[in-house]
Image (cartoon, rainbow, N blue to C red; front, side):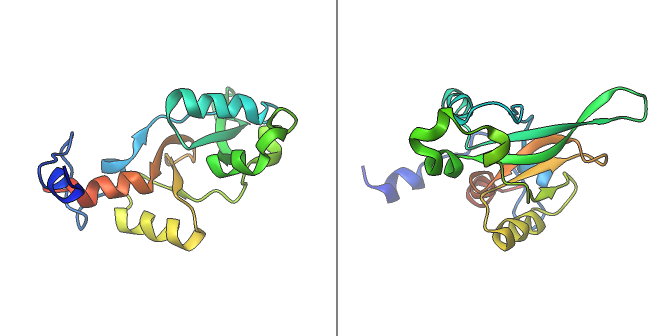
Length: 153
């Protein structure tokens, strides 16, 4: 079967709004995979491979208003960082390999705004945060592709 014929008969697995109306919250994956800064890149690689994700958030703990400790985005380790580490993955902590210039988006943003953020930063993922800047999900270029492919509402 050719790619054209298999694509023509494909159907989306969820309902999505059209690109023009889509918001980050419509396309994002809820929840984030995270690891402590001291975790080895081999540990991070195992997390990514087991859960089929391309990035892991490295959070930092900050005091919340109620006195408890909460997490904020400190950095992100991508699959590219793992490839760059190669055989040294056991010796490199996630905190050393994490990209600290992490673009973040909010669920109410138009999807096009998040897409521009990705292209401006040259990244394939953004961390989705709530109004307190706590990580609540991820948005990837593959999620954007899903809206382009199946957005109909």
